[in-house]
Image 1 (cartoon, rainbow, N blue to C red):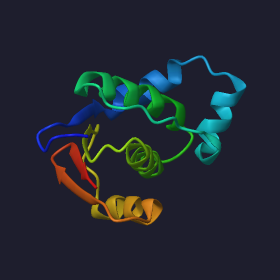
Image 2: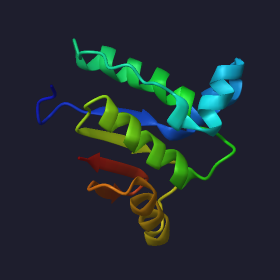
Image 3: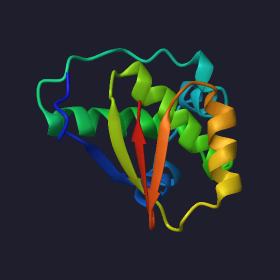
Length: 125
């Protein structure tokens, strides 16, 4: 679906800020607290921009200010896997510690490669 040089990239702080401003319906609140109940539909990737925007819209449904950044990132990994996205980059407001990265690996529970470059976390499945 994606060529090697294709990548979805987004700013985590902006996404978190947008999730705070979003008007929540009851079902959105349930998905935010328990994203396992959310059914994520798959969409074929017509182009990189469309896929990136669709991914960001879905991400708004699952990330929450009520959980840790590590948990939110693990949720994003699950979402990317469900959408068949093999590589993406998250711009974070700060660099993660080794302990935080270990928590993400523990929460996600599947093979994934996380590479941190300053405030950017590169994810490859």
